[in-house]
Length: 491
Image 1: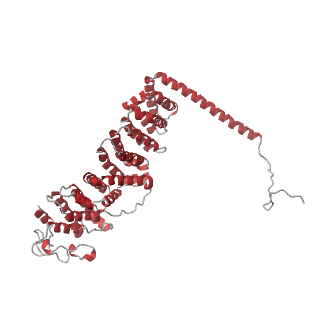
Image 2 (image 1 turned 135 degrees about the vertical axis):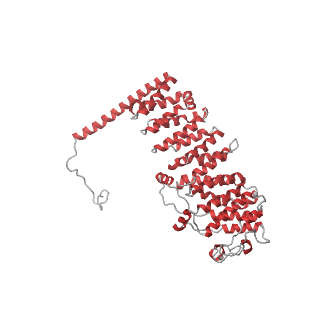
Image 3 (image 1 turned 30 degrees about the vertical axis):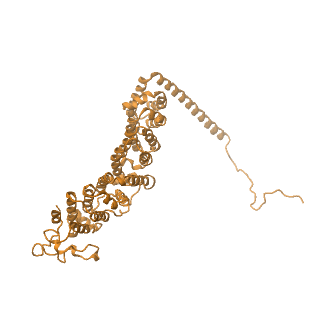
């Protein structure tokens, strides 16, 4: 197998040379000196069409090829980017890409274990090619800017090199010939931390590759799992409470969706804190719509494993409930319905009063879609059953909102659905509904009387002011600044 490997990665002589195994000429891009920051050219014996030089081990050939891949090229110039887009690139860059592709194939098909030097060389090459500083983001933190970025994603011009490096990294992590204990010496917490920093890349293709790589690393390197959870929590904290800007939240949540599904029952206290302190606050940013499906999936996984956490999630939703953002409010109502489907009676009763006060506000929303979405909650059979069993508490909270809709809401669709919900309550408990109706009428009469008293008070004030107009000059004396404010003494 290694003979095939040596044949794949052997150096070819330039076409201008005679014969099949001559050494590279001065025009060969890899014959440059080390002064240019590139590795020296391989020996002439390794350039033939056969294997490597005599006496050269597979480790030597592998490391030499890794050194070639450690050369980083600049793709920032417009000409280089345009050439890469056209598929025509310089010979040096094309040769590096071919070497990367050959390494991907050979690591994937390897049968003999990689030595520690080979593992170290791979990790070093990954770090050199992948870990980089992203250009500054000249954007506003508004949600509109985030939507614009979604419409026009950025594509890294160096991607066709990075893609091969990511493919090699994935093969390296998944390969059975890589010793986990040795690899963990080099893929340590520092390596994982810098890998997580790459999730802020503007290129969606890179974030997709990182998602797969991180999931494989989490599964294979068990000793790194606590650090990965802590590092991802820190990313969420910075995003929510400091920057309000990160490109890879959706991908990180997608990885953790599968991680959470593997948590053992009963859940550890650390995992519950991750839900309350890291996941629930992610509802706060304006751009929550970008990653809300992944966030909802993670939260549902927690509730399925421990239903008592439903009350914690509902209280968190109420804490971060939007006030002026109607689109976000509709998303919250959708997530709330999914959570309530898994909520048991005991947890529901603990939070039903503040919950239905918030739902009553949504029913009276002037945005017809918010009101309609809140009314559709009654179509959920499980929620309807919970409401029916707790109608003595819930109906007095909800009925005034329903009555206001029937009297004053402007949208006909909302009026129709409101009447249907009111009919449900009537069939559920007619006596309680009539009691709520009387209480509402009394409250309305009190409110009208209070408004009338307030109106009369203002009318009296206006009338008294008109009878006693303020005219003429109002005289008042001002003491000199130097005059002492003391009584004169008798002498």
